[in-house]
Length: 336
Image (cartoon, rainbow, N blue to C red):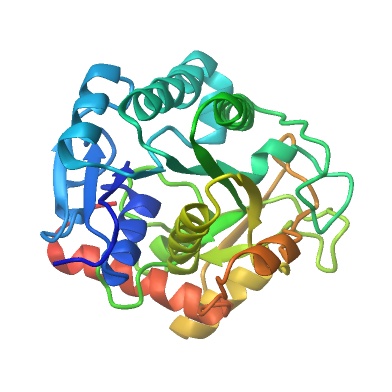
């Protein structure tokens, strides 16, 4: 019997980050209900200890029913679309899957009396930042529909929280990578575009090379620098955010989630080479439009506000865990 006050709903809990959040919640003793369409998620990624409901968060009636049936007291919301380039090509999909669907879920939460909401937001809300590291108060100037769709959802949450007995935490992620150190989950989504995932695929024979987009950035080696956060640390931050919301019912938060330092593309690829003791072929190609020189979180606010402290802030471990998961996928006959 759990000593927690209520079950937690995790939307998109069969996906990459959501499945790790489910593991963190279960490890902390929370009862969990996963809601996922399985369009991009995997049923096998949901642990047996969690209750699974196949459904769409845009269905207000269904979400209201689920919240009431299971006595859901909090929602961790990961469901949505997240490919930047796809958002540019198909913006209406992103405003439907991210903004409109989130609005429907928030409506269901309010109608059913669910009082706490942790939202999967993104550093893409900042666009090309004027200062690095980037503080939460930096101008929000997203340069693609993905970032805009997330920023719009943040605004919906803020407006809802002013008139309803409801509080929220929006966590703005930087670059999420790695896999559960115990090998229980990892990045399995077909077409995932993050550098460490792509490099892990190259190191395990799924790709012949890795493209390096731009070598003329204003960085020490000319390649873009990013703040890579281990997915298990990120998942743990959601649990701490949830516990903070419960302890401070009148307070809502918007926090960066990163380590406060970064690695360049070439440094990441060198780390993969070192961990695997082999060389990944790099192909130098032109910059992608809108990519900033450096994108690093100012993480002082999250460290000051939550009891969360990173456990896996080591690029070697992040890479090694990603590689281990790629091998696990191959051994299980699962393709990412």
